[in-house]
Structure formats: C-alpha cells, structure tokens
Length: 309
Image 1: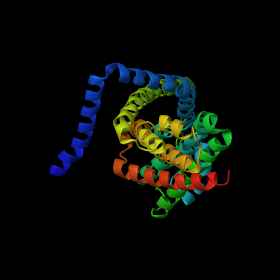
Image 2 (image 1 turned 90 degrees about the vertical axis):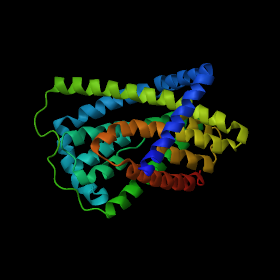
Image 3 (image 1 turned 90 degrees about the horizontal axis):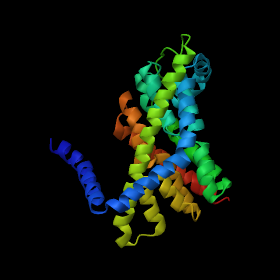
Image 4 (image 1 turned 180 degrees about the vertical axis):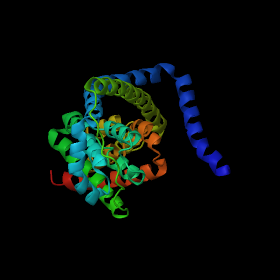
C-alpha cells in the first residue's frame, strides 16, 4: 500500500508544481504553449496527418494481409513478431511516431497480434521517420547529420529488438489481417476519423510538454548547467526542442544525445505512444526499459558514425 502511494505521489507533485508555475507566470507559459502549438502546426501536422491516415488505411486493405504473409518468416526469425507486427514496424519506419503505435493498437483490437508478441511489436514499431530526422533535424544540422541520426536510430531499435526476440518463442499463429474484402468507403472514413483524433492528441501533447520543458529549463537556470546538459534535460520533456538546441552545435556528443532522445522519445512522445499502447495491455515499465536500452544503443551508434563525418 505504501509503495502504491509513493508511486503515485511523484506524478501528483510534478502536476502540482506545473500548476503553480502556470498560476504564478501565466503569460510566460501561455506563450510557451502557443509556441508548442506553432511547432506542431508547422513542423508536425503537415507530415503526421497524412502519414497517420495512410498508415491506418493501408492496415485495413487486403494487400496488407498479403504483405504480412510475405514478411512473416523474416520478422518471426529476426524479432519473434508476426507478419502483422512486421508490417506495423515497416509503416512506423516510413511514417514515424505515433503512427506505428496506432497501427499496433489497430492490429491488436482486430485480433491480428498474439498476446506474447505485444511488447516486441510495440517496441519495434515505435520509431521516428525520415521526414522528421532527415527533413526537420537535417535542415538544422545538415542532411548528412539527419540521415546519420536516422541510421543510428534504426540500428538502436532493431539491435535491441533482435536481442529481445532471442529470449522468446516465435509468436503463436493468428489470423492474418484483412482476410475479408473491406468496403473502401468505410475504410477511408474510419481511417480519416481516427487519424484526425490522433493528430489532435499529438498536438495537445506537444503544446503542453513544450511548456513543461521550458519550466524545466527555467528551474535549472540558477544551476548553470552546461548548455548540452540543459538541452538534454529539456528534451526528456519535449524531444523536438531538446534536439533543436543540441544540433545548433552538432558535435559527436551532441548528436549522440539527440539520437538517444529521438529513440527514447521523451515524455511528450511517450505519452503519445502510450495513449494507444496502454489499450493493448503492454506493461509500461517493460516498455520504458526497452526504449531506454534502444536509446542507449542508438546513442552509441550515432557517436561512432559522427566520428567518421
């Protein structure tokens, strides 16, 4: 009972601290929320909405079942996930988060994922995409750094997922997705509705956690941390702003810290992903542990690659 109370006390205290900060400095943090909304509207929404819609639509198409069957042997051998989980991972690589997490939920609710593969599929399908890494971050530090981050990010996710799969049996056989002919009109409207609701949730998370990240920066200002350390801590709250600050000076160590943030996700991305994954029954501590391991692996790979630039 005491453990349960103490585990809930920390989030409550953090929420109370944020509430008091908003109460004492409403103008400052309202402006930060507005900056977060602008960041979402300009940099995230134009890419996330179409990719989310297309990801959900493709997962409902009969062709998805055929591709799933083709991918099944390779993904079962490498990562111990089914073809459906492998397709979610491919869609995540192409689209970026939170599309992969939304696809995992969609497949789980349709009975296309086995219970024992939920965690492996979730950790494999929660990746960033080239549009953000090579596009958004590449525009700040150069396209070479953007593609380096993308390569290191995938290396971290896939290597840890491979090791995680070594401890598991191949997933139980489940019915492949989209066995029946779907109604195109129904699939389009359902996918569009789900994509719009999801991208609005993403925007809310970015706006709030951007402001929370600024609160962290304000709190740490008297400590006079090194700029990279302050940017990293801010990135743990809102990943995008932390990466932007780190890549203003793209040293190998800064690139490695950015790779960790992109792969782990920070609180903002994790909240977006968990809003979907919690409904699959995946345990949050196990998911966080794997994402942290993937982040460390990505940081090591990014540092090694950055030394070659």
